[in-house]
Image (tube, rainbow, N blue to C red; front, top):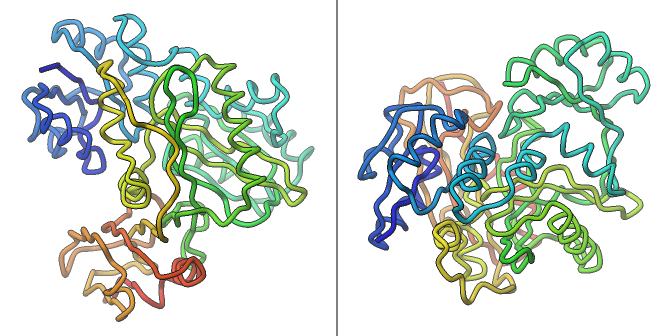
Amino acid sequence: MKKVLFLGGAPTQIPPIKYALEQGHEVITLDYLPENPGHKLAHQYYNISTTDKEAVLEIARVEKIDGIVAYASDPASPTAAYVAEIMGLPGNPYDSVEILARKDLFRDFLAKHNFNVPRSNAFYNEDEAKLWLDEIGVPAFIKPVDSSGSKGVTHLQNAEDFSSAFEHALKFSREKKVVVEEKIVRQGYQVAGDGFVLDGELVFRCWADEHFDKLCNGLVPIGQTFPTSHNEDLLNEAHRETQRLITLLGMKTGALNFDFVFSEDGKFYFLELGPRNGGCLIPEVIRYATGVDLIKYTVDAALGLPCTGLTMKPTNGFWSSYMVHAIDDGKFKELSLSERAKEYIVERDVQVKPGAQVNVFSGSHDTLGTMILKYPSQKEMLDMVDNMERDIRVIVE
């Protein structure tokens, strides 16, 4: 039995906790929200912030942990790397994880090492940021340097709205710093998915098309469809550039979460490369689609256990995650499902109750439930997820 510390105990972070318990490990959870369900499963828990590196390190030392996991959490990833590095536990270099977790540091690193990168700069001061916007023009993206889940992000269409977009981003930034970045006109879908690094090599990756709801929010993903529709030549370039980045950063072990695009002229652009597993049920869908259990490997790798058998596997069938959400404010009445949706749903977890107040989907915090679906063809899958209001709809009154 080994002792593993999980940074976060939210519902989306339960799968690796359950796996660790099934393996007979001693589980400690750490989360500033006392009611999060991970605490209820753990042998021991602490109510502190996962971003408080020194407090987490002190607990890790007192508990004499064997491994630390920041599952599906950008803010907690640098903390996990910091603790692992100081205590000599399996993990990745703290400085490298900090680069991946901070949008401004990441863009600077990409530019320095001749990756394709959008024109981007980060500012504490709004007036200086506005001068940069005047240079790159609109449309542009205004983002906090250190938020996750698309919180605080604005797709700026009119320069007149810049001030409110800058203030909105500041509210979600711990650093109080904002990225102003040109928009890359992409071909096809934005790409998401997860991968895994062992001994510095990208040994596994499974990529998907990422989908957004045009009726309420074009920035927060509502689901991913596996496999991606992009051609193999483009995907091979993405793999090569990812390996180059991993090598430059000295990344050693663990999960990666991807967001990237291909421009109209076929160039590869990283949007983000998270040093952690993806949210939106990405590891769970990958397990269905390939048989590869990244949840298991994440825990095993963090404890220094062998990860034998982790190799590239093709996607078998057509699968998606789906984040149940409302496109109108109101009180939840029911979830309307078409006949084909009922047929295709493999897993369903919707906990919102009739009469509960729901809001238009503006971020991951507005998610009302999750689903995993399997489809008969890629064509039907893409058409359905791009127009899901025809098949799965939250009815409000």
